[in-house]
Length: 331
Image (cartoon, rainbow, N blue to C red; front, side):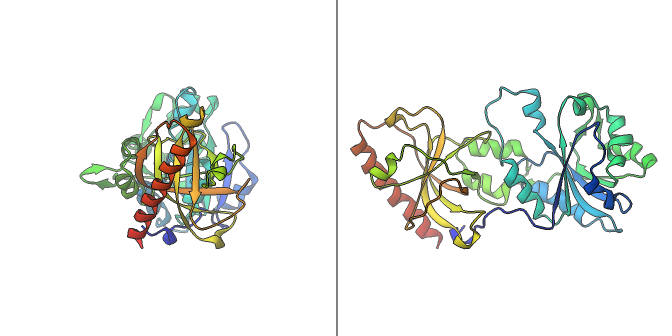
């Protein structure tokens, strides 16, 4: 993909995001839509990959006067149950909302996955939770499970939903290379630095976003200034050097800028925390405290420790040449 084809991830201005938790009053923002009713796609939608987009598209095209919507969860149930897990997210919350908003839905309802949600039975989910949100049609993948101990599935939703004015629609999982597209498959591809396969399933290159922070500014002293981003709950690809392209949600007029990035702990300078350090080509921008989207395009080499900064500088120069050669082939 050509760097100039990438775009910053910005939430659609006409898409309403509503946060709600079990036990709270229905948000006033939702009131105008309760009478009309919602056609909602439901799921975790981690990464908003092509399979998710197929599912959401079915809800968007439901018609019959219903407002197209997405119902998702925050935090991811896996994070709720296993708080000690290493990072696994395929998108942070801001990018997830931006990606969902561009699918054509008008409302995103973000349900708090807390203890009250965990204790909600499958029957209460159908009889109380969905009707209180104005859901008239629900779309989910054929493997979707809900309610306490994952006690409900789409067969139950179809059977019981009709008694509460809800039509339930199972969507066959989108397949690629003979297997269903799934967040698990994408995570495996990223863990193997198979960025091409991950991009095919995501419908875009894997990207890491965050706010540019102040580092030790060592890169500038050796001729390669970098934008530094901490990676939070992201699934971290193999530590090493990547050809990247960057966009800026707060400054979309900049377009996409090609570059090279190191993802790692910086062993040469005794670093500890994993961070992304992106060197963007042919620009001199003050990026501190700005949000950046970094698209990971090609794995160049694994991270390694050098004996001194001079060796590091020479190796970075070679990495820059490799990344520039990669980008040249895309143009």
